[in-house]
Amino acid sequence: MSSAAIWLLIVLLGIGTFLIRFSFLGIIGDRKLPPLVLRLLRYTPVAVLPGMVAPLVLWPDSTGGEPDAAWIAAALATLLVGVWRKNLVLSIAAGAAVFYLGIWLQA
Image (cartoon, rainbow, N blue to C red; front, top):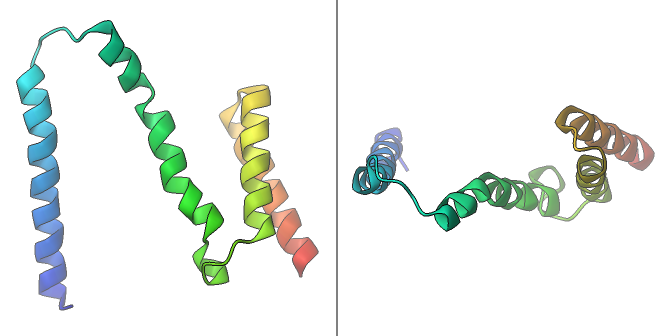
C-alpha cells in the first residue's frame, strides 16, 4: 500500500470518526440524559481498556503471537493489586515488577 493510500485512509477514518461522534453529540445537544444512560456511559472506559490490552497480553508481538507467562503474570498482578489497593500507580508498578521478574526468570 502506498503512503498516499495510507494517508487517504487515515483522513477518511478521521472524518468518519468525527461524523459518528458529532452526530451523537449533535442529536443529544444540551438535553439531559436518563440516569441509566449516564450510569452506562461511566463504564465505557472500564470496558474499552481491557478490550485494548487483552490482545496485547494474550498474543504479544514480541513472542510472535504466542501467549507468554511473563505477560500474563504481569497482567494478573496489575489486576489483583489494582482491585486490592485501588491505586493506579501501585498496580502499574506491580505489573511492571512482575513482568521484568518474569523476563529475568525466563532468560
